Amino acid sequence: MYVIVVYDVDEERVSKINRLLKSYLIWIQNSVFEGIITDKLLEEMLSRVKKIMRGDDSFIVYKLKTKSLIERQVFGKRVETNII
Image (tube, rainbow, N blue to C red; front, side):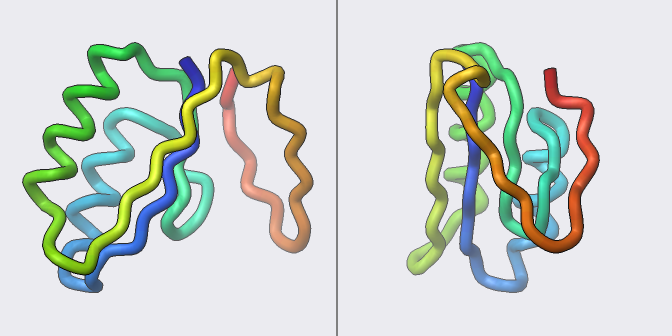
């Protein structure tokens, strides 16, 4: 499946979440990741994220069956990725 992840966590946890997500997905910009991931790996990733998160943190996962459902418009600095 194809996922887009958006998060807002306290500054002291940003680097931990960022480092963790980079091992599963592609970093698009500050708090945005996306990529293809299996159900099993998504479950594993979310389990690890939940151990880092605290009270006011926010973590959103958008799940899509395929990337072809996305129409992306980028304004400003374009981030180059190798997303299939």
